[in-house]
Image (spheres, rainbow, N blue to C red):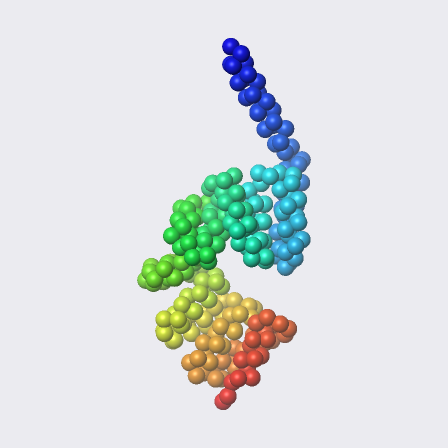
Length: 252
């Protein structure tokens, strides 16, 4: 009898503790506001501010899966803190198992760290979710992983499927073009990179990649045109500097 009463008291205490830590509607809204501020900061290139806002969101509501995922993105792409980013993605998925964006994010991290089989499983989980609004992103990432595993035909098929869903998806055009160049398919690669430059006309990298490909092919006038457009779009630093260096190497 005593044991039964003790067990009941423990269960009641645990339930009360769980309720005590569950954020109110007002607190949850405050956490969501911090999350939204973090998204804006990251888009504006203010990664430290984004990380602080995500931490503030999670201090209020530690079960906000979107904040764990967003924190992972900042740690991953702004600070290269890969282990912490992986933990953040996995925590987001613990809290929300059917979260295709987080499955894709974890998949691309696993692929970049050489764990391709695990990555494919994550991409497939993302693609199997009918609520996923950007399946072409996971298809592109899956295609790259397959290609790097030596499964080139499957990789090409996934990348083509990606672009059939989203013909203007910049990363898909870029990666397919670079893969074709790596395979020695110069004309096809240039065609894809030209499509990249058309679809993503305001992206300096699009013109840089096309210029480099044209330079390799011996098309000096075409390379010059691409590098000049790149330099115009990026007058200071980054791809613009690389385009200006490449321009100085061109000889008619």
